Length: 372
Image 1 (cartoon, rainbow, N blue to C red):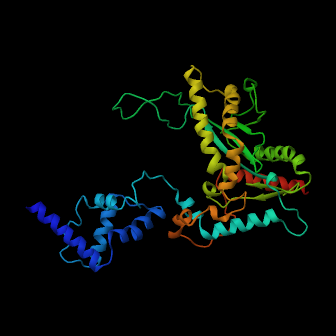
Image 2: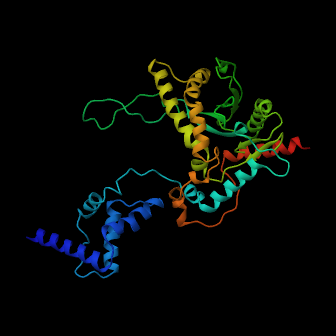
Image 3: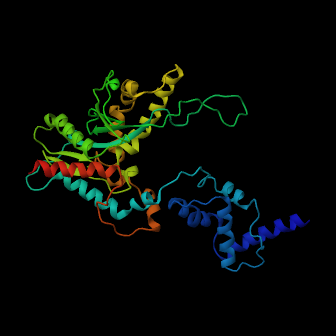
């Protein structure tokens, strides 16, 4: 009887809430659940209950239980509105990234992009085949992504043996708007180049080394010189656009700080596939009793690079980030919603974090050197 009376009271309070404060369950979803989810603060069952309780108490609903709505109220709410809301695993979004992708930065970035592509005065328009995007990605020799695998029924976790070597090898990838890519660069961790690193190099990768296996000014300068040599003939004296980071008629355009997960095609399309394919190829190599060494990396990476850097994937990278064709609408209001809680006008470009700014500084130093 007590349980039934409580249930009846909950129903009465629910109806009173709908009638007196005009916050039906549907309205609550529209104004609360979606609102917080879009801004990067999604509600779980506990927080949804807290919001429902707070709304009712703030409007002084008569006879509202001290304990608030019942323990099953949020489940019923989700069930009743499963056509418009659902439960999902959350994915961490860094606050700096959430703030960076805002309406002001978005419009300013595309204004700059359009201005550079169209040119000024007697400048030629940069064609799609002379638009490039570049970035680096780290691959760990013995660590990869999680994969789905078969195991005994009822097993919660399926273990998978890997070497566990976390040493980083950096690859520098450059894609072109015509669906091709340039020769990749590979940076090993080391104090100097070792003869034993000499190996089969199917992609003719440019090799470098650095104490921690990352880019620095010296590597960056060598890379931009290599990029210029490799793309100069195709440009035939026309301007080229390098989305990253002007001399030799190479136009420089950096991404807004902390926003490459939205605007950079390599981050949006290529690198996730690259790491999935690296995990697959590396696991196959280790199943045969091998471990990934610097002297065997290039042949393995060549397989991954060819699997990933397809014409379709490259063109999708430019398309999904609104570069080819030029389309500001690819970044929707919902994608910018997490910035609404903190948005203020910003000034671009904002100083990028290491190791990204190494490349930007390198490009500028190289340009200054060439103009002396």
